Structures are given as C-alpha cells and as structure tokens.
Amino acid sequence: MEITEVRVKLTENQNDKLQAFCSITLNNDFVIRDLKIIEGTKGVFVAMPSRKLADKCPRCSGKNHMRANFCNDCGARLPAERALKDERGRARLHADIAHPINAQCREKLQKVILDAFRMEREKAKEAGYVPQQLHDELYADDVDVEYLAPSATPGASRERPKEHRQHSAEV
Image (cartoon, rainbow, N blue to C red; front, side):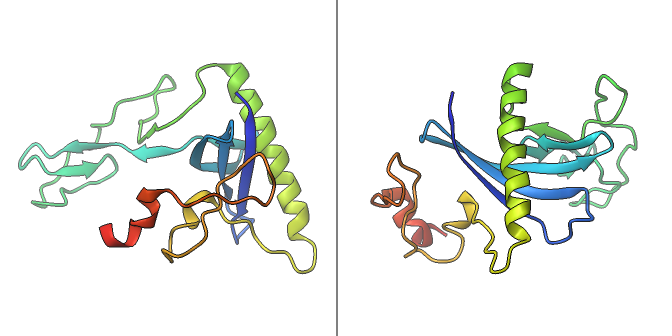
C-alpha cells in the first residue's frame, strides 16, 4: 500500500481538540475521506472515519442515536445505559467505517498524515495561505467543476467520471 496523496484542511479554531480534517489517496486509486486529526491528552493522533451508532426505540422502533434521551419519533424516554461498552468500560457511540487492521499500518498512516498536518500548519503561517480542498469538497457546489483526480503526472486532469457528471441531476 502506498499513500500517494494526503490532503489536510485545518480547522479555524486551533484551540479545539479537533485540529484538522484529512483525506488520503492510496495507490492513486482509492480515497478515504473524513479522517480527523485530534489533540488528545497524550498528543495529536489520527481518528479514522466513523459513524454514530443508533438503536431502535422499544416503543415505536424508531431509529435514535445512542446519546439520545428521548425517541425522535414518538418522544418516549429511552433507557439510559443501552450502549454497548468498550474494553475500558466506556459507552461505544461510534463505529469505524474504515480502519487499519494492524499496528504497523496504523503507525504508517499516522506518521504520513501527521507529517502532512505539521507541514500544512507551517504553510498556514505564511502570507497568502490558501487552504487545501478535501476530496469531498470537489463536487460540493458546482457540477461543472473540473475533475481533479490524482495522477502520476502532476497537474494532469482526467475526464470526469460519468457518475459525477450526473451528480446534480440525481440530487
């Protein structure tokens, strides 16, 4: 596995625990978005993309996040201690969507991402700094944005994939 691109977007308030969002490209073929760079008690670390866990209301079967006290659909009070616990006894509120399988892969990802994060922080101190765009920002506003796929040739662009050309018609 080769990490061929790292994009880091710093958060505006550097005093928050969340320092930046990140997306990485593997082998010029596969993008992983929504990695987070967080300032923890033991230093900066990379959090993998995750989703909030949910369960069903015992009364109406409506879907609710694990932190919810009341059902979004029927308003019934939800049991307080319904979340599964992790190995440290803390409630599991999120599940990873993508994550490394072993410590070596995690260390490799974290090193490359945190190096890019530190470089981006240094660039942000310079006059005229322009923040990087993350992969998911490329299609956010305008259908006619040029497709900027990473390639072996810097500055090269490819034809926009068919599924992205039809993006606004599907929404």
